[in-house]
Length: 570
Image (cartoon, rainbow, N blue to C red; front, side):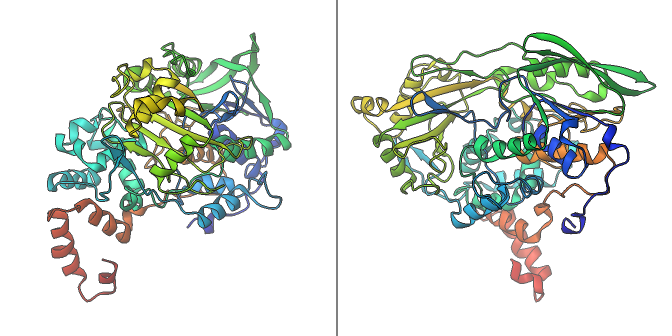
């Protein structure tokens, strides 16, 4: 029904007298600001975005130069059915080609250059793992099928490791799953179920990462900058170096109205008065709050302080039970942290090595590694990727930018006998070179042409922590008059966190509900209800064994559909 719903909205009555205040400038807030104007008919000068740092984008970052090194804290894997993100991008002007949109250029690039990984994982110091099945036993397949069929509310706060047999964690499916999505055994089984349902159509491509989509440049230049430029051109107010410290509420019965925003602007305290006619959008929680950088000689220091965004959510949550429970997500840093690092290689040696493992030349604006290459037997569970080059517009032709991360920063390395979290940029690179099969005596020649900037992120997988209903607030809680929650820590039925799509969806939901617009939020793609996607997924899950899934397909489905049109689908 999505095309039928693509209507031009009528201007809401009284919109000229309303104001919108957005706390945080990540993709959720930027999207909310755009939809307030696009479908809500609000003027840009009625919208203010507060950002505690000096630039917008939140977790979608990217900065640096070849002299001091480039840095990105993470990357984004996307797919064709990010319905909300592509709806947003369909009206964001390209900053590279006049008359085109961000969606136009994104789709054109990925159609010309579809993603495919030639080497998804390696082991034994550089041997390429060539198996493409998921390595599942009959028992593993039964567990996955049971999980897919289970009702979400029946799972509670069960973790992945509490549900699966130990053998599952030795399979290639778990290797691909945890490295692709950054899942840990202690993470939420509910979230794993949601991922299975939401992306079941991508399951057959897990070992090759086909059907994934990637930006031309880093996520800031390709996604954030075009949106920011559009908002600025429309008169949206950005207030940087501004930290919101508290929200004041007025209670009337069980209803809560934000009446004031307390903030610190460039070190000066201030209070902005609000009314029930205003809207306050709060990106509660942050995956990259308190991130710290290291350098070639120094490891990043883990920042265990509370952080302004988590402190604010705790203050807000204390006002009403429906505003969520932030401590569920930020209360155990040892289970929510990991470390990444960006490699800037100014030369040809490192580039040639990475090309050898990618099994393709790194051509301009074309697929490089095709996604992450995971080191299967790494104590840190290292993964490394080279996305389309150049990743930065100021990146020279002879410079290659790669990104790597490890899920287990408290483990000692296989070559460097230190915890990953204790390693300098140089040592992190040496550990990677070791797994690429480079002799210790030859490592220096690679190190000399590289700049490595490590990043420690204490809350990077906090959104995956086990949870139950009520731990995350609804986008607009029932008791809220003018406060909406955006981003990765609000509750959206059936969708998956740790995606750009989730943040944009929360923004559209909030705007449409606040303004009571006669327009539907783009539907979540329901591939779990598509017999073609289910059939392909079942065949993938059965792997090499003659198990229950094969019998299910052959003895039940095929018999029932024999001599019908649908038989061909199988």
